[in-house]
Length: 164
Image (cartoon, rainbow, N blue to C red; front, side, top):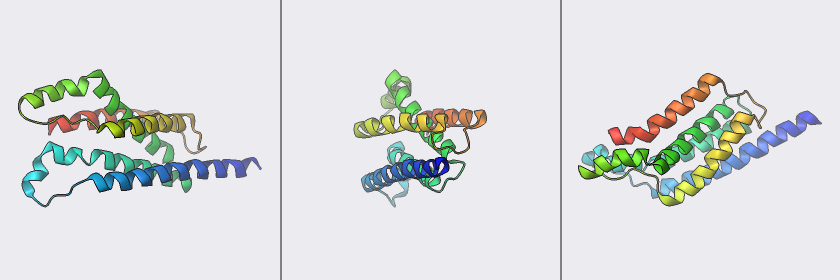
């Protein structure tokens, strides 16, 4: 009976994460404007519009991995959680704003998430981190190396658009 509960709990949590990820993916995909003009591909603003979409796809992937009880589900949840929470926290602390002030001075735009994504993504990132590190899904635990990789990825994703 205990094994059945573990399987159902993993499937329910994974299904909920998948549905949220799918809904956000569809929503943010409709917000993205694709361009065939080559000069737009070299603008920061063009690539930054994909960040919420890619983050939503990462959440959808984590949910699907959990539904199919794949051992990497916790790692992908932690990766999503670190990437989003670091992006938002660095912005709140003014670290990414400090670098973009210089870029605003030379004529480039601010690279923050839109306001409505911050509320959704920050809450989801904290929930994802709790699920991943407490091993609620009863899958393979996140290793120290994977945790450090997730943290490093969050830092790179937060500051990379400023360097483009």
